[in-house]
Length: 195
View 1 (spheres, one colour):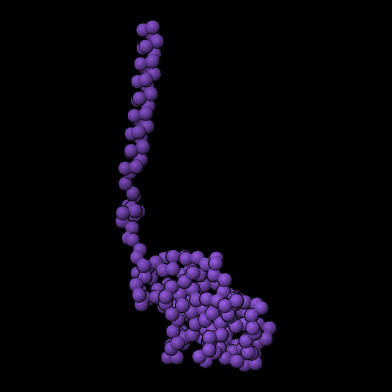
View 2: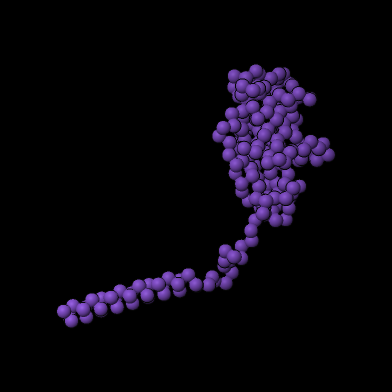
C-alpha cells in the first residue's frame, strides 16, 4: 500500500511538473518581443473615416472593359462606373458599397434614369481603406438605354431617344457627389451621345 501511495505521489508530482513547464513555455512565447522593424498591434495607427472634402468622385462612361467612350452606336451598350480618389495625405476608411452608390442619367433638366429605381435588395456596404492619394475604380455596369421608373431600371423599360441624343451621367458615392465643372474635365459629369 505504501508502494501504491508512493507511485501515485510520483505520478502526481510528474504531472504537476509537466503542467507547470508547459505553462511556463506558453508565457515565454507570449512575452517574446518583436524583431526590430516589426510593429506590434499597439504601434499600428488606427485608421479613421475619411474627412468631408477629402474624397472626390468622378462619373465615367465607356465600354465593358472600362475604356472611356462618349459616342455609342445602336449596337453598343454604354457602361458606367466611378473613380474615387483620396485627396488627403493619410489613409482613411470610406464606404464604396452598392448601398451608398447612386448613378443618374439626365438630358437637360429631365431625369432619364436612376439606379435608385433598380432592385436594391442585394445592396451591401463595403467599407475599406482608401490609401492616401490613391484612385480606385468600380467595375463597369451596363445601361440598357432605357428610362427607369418605379417598376425598374433595366430591360423591358421604355427605350430612350437615340439618333444623336445627348445625355449626362452623374454619381453619388457615400454622400459625395460627382461635380460638373467645365474648367476641369477630370471632375466633370460626362456628356455622351447615343446614335
